[in-house]
Length: 336
Image (cartoon, rainbow, N blue to C red; front, side):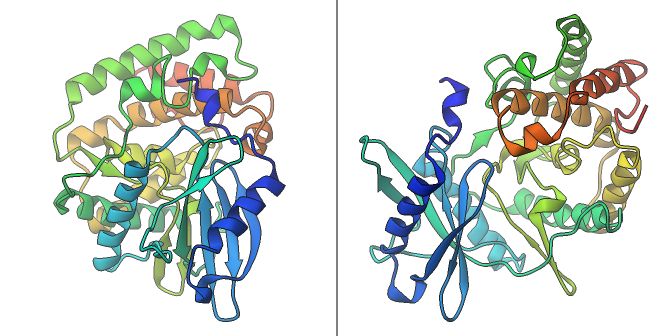
């Protein structure tokens, strides 16, 4: 598969028409004004009726199968039952939760409508202790994941070393990252080899590897009074539990406050669950793996607002963090 084919090629107007088409498949109570909220990977629309708000998600092409999406919704159901505030999918007129929308070129897109999760998104500017809340809710998800009996049909994306950092990884090849100098490939290759070897030894037993959110950053938390909501399970899949810590500081590992963010996340996590000694020892490995994985993402999403916002020295920072990691496996975070 060409990884770039995952990127959205429809313009905003076509997506809006598709969303308006989709909403007509739902009972009248859910039909309202449709407005594009954001389009980073999938397109998310706000649907506003007289009584409520809903979120309609139109999936990008060539990423998830219908069974993958149904599986995500199964986990969201189970999390809701356990008292964690997550989006819930709504049935259309035909009793379906994952819609198949036909495009004029003969291709199809999947869509799902969710209830609206209330709350405000925390930011690092407000208070680094927001990472404590992030760690705490992540631990609750992990506790649930470790005890939940998945349905037989359950199928989600696999985030292992090869699918993250291999040349044919889900998000493409890290070597295609913008502004990465060819002369810096070697140090990253050394880091990738060490990460792979450490994780092969660490293994994938059920106490350390299972179903995770895989993109649990501050932008996917919603705080309302004492309640923490979690959104955007689109990348959830099978991986190491500590990958969620690495994902929490995605793109920002090189910031001066990053070591403090990691400490706060761990403090919050430990309130709800325990990080084993073996997992703790590999935190530098998971953080470095995620940073290089994001190099692949930036390479295959170079024209997105997020990628462009990183500037011209982001790849250089990655190389600096790799050197730090290779030197006694220090935590690859923080400013120079």
